Each structure stands twice: as structure tokens, then as C-alpha cells.
Amino acid sequence: MYIIVGLGNPGREYQNTRHNIGFDVIDVLADRNHIAVGEKKHKALIGKGFVAGQKAVLVKPQTYMNLSGESVRDVINFYKIDERSELIVISDDVSLDVGQIRIRKKGSAGGHNGLKNIILHLGHDEFQRVKMGVGEKPRGADLADYELGHFNSTERKTMDDSAGRAARAIEVMITEGADKAMNEYNRK
Image 1 (cartoon, helix red, strand yellow):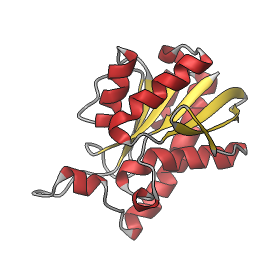
Image 2 (cartoon, helix red, strand yellow; image 1 turned 180 degrees about the horizontal axis):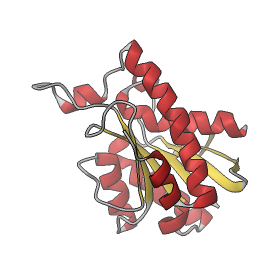
Image 3 (cartoon, rainbow, N blue to C red; image 1 turned 90 degrees about the vertical axis):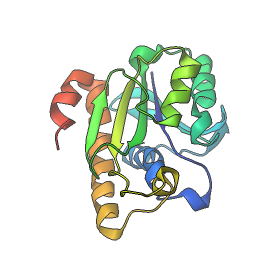
Image 4 (cartoon, rainbow, N blue to C red; image 1 turned 30 degrees about the vertical axis):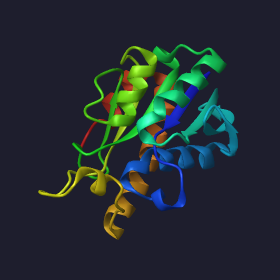
């Protein structure tokens, strides 16, 4: 069984922001695999079904980004999965170009507060992740304002395409492993 977590913030005002790209990828996975993500459990909205032929729980934490680890820990405890091999977390990344995808099997939070909180609650950084490039903040701009800002129309189209690629990458991670997905999707 896989737990696939898309990071974001709950609420209408955060829809389609850079910080919520994890939620967008969960929406694409849900559509592709006919999974309804609407059940309220584990401080999250969840949906259960199959992704790439494997049982999966799609998760959108509702704790706000900085407390995402509370929800992730709760889901892992309930389903008793091995987070080192069966957890996949999707997050935004300001150090990657808009639309770029980077898959990792482990690593630091890289300054991302949602990942930092998950690492805190897991007690380690050995879990698979899909980082979604949202572009570097403009010089002099506030990082929080940038991350909570919306994409322009060109960037939105790029991110929609990227969310589809990320969903396919996650399916490869499940069927053929993270190394294969990294070789295929970790390109500019």
C-alpha cells in the first residue's frame, strides 16, 4: 500500500497558488485513477483506491503547510506502512524552474516548512518525494507572499502539464521504483 501526500493549504484563498501544487498533483492522480478525495480523516482529506495497480491512499493534509507532519504521522500510524518505501510526498520547490520535477528518495527539507515538519514527525528524512518547481522568487520579494501567490496564465499551463507528468512519475515510482522515475523525470 502507498500513502501519497500532496502538500498545500486548505481553503479557497489558497487554491491554485504555488504552495498548493501538491494538492493539484493529488487531484490529477485522483482523476486518472477514479478516486474521490473527500473523506475527512487523519487531519486530512483522503481518498482510497488503486494507483498503478497498487492500493493507495491519496492525502491532502488540512493542517496548513507548517503542520503537515501531524497529518502524515497520523495516516502512517493508522495504515501501518513503511514510510521509507511506501510514502510519497509532493511539494513545491522554489529552487527549481517552473514546471521542473525532481524526484528524491531522501534528503533535507531544503527550507520547506511542510517537509521540515514531516521530517520532525517521522524522526528521519528517508521518504520518497516529488518536488515541483514553481520558480525562484523575484529579487526583493517576500518568500511567503511569492509562495502564496498565483501563477500567471503561461506558468499555470506549464504547471498543469507538470502535474500530469508528476502523476505519471508517481505511477513509475510505484511500478518500477524511484530510481527508474528519477532517470526518466529528473530533467529540465
